[in-house]
Length: 170
Image (tube, rainbow, N blue to C red; front, side, top):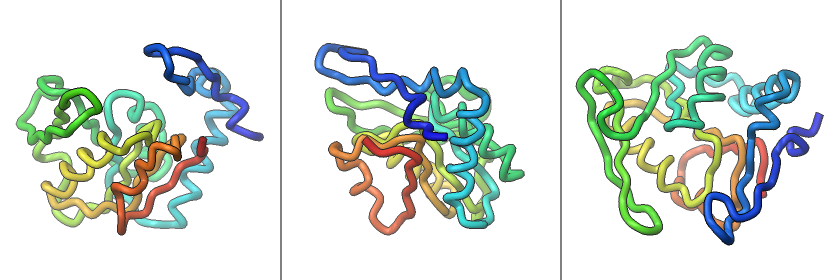
């Protein structure tokens, strides 16, 4: 089954000139979702994973499935003021401004083996910020997993020395 066939292109979304890769057709098909999950899990080559960290919000979709499949805990990384307990945060640059992400202080223990998951690797800013949060808490990043990579944006270059896997590449 070619999961690429379940990704829909939406021209000029969210703004003119952008070709958006829509994963909702993939999510609608249980067999395609299961195949995508298998590809993501197989990329780990039997690595031990203690926690799966998912970036808000689309990283939650497969991040939670990965955590369940790997018998690992799931850790949401969210926008400011969305998590109820004590958090740490990191701000990072966007194309036009900055953004901030937060994680619970007690979500990652020193030495935890961590898989970071998000739906798309584009410029790499969000995933790099998530790496900073995990490493501040003492987690060891085993791999960064993405459903797809937009390769011409060179986001992978931000992760020298880290294992990066994308199920699809455009």
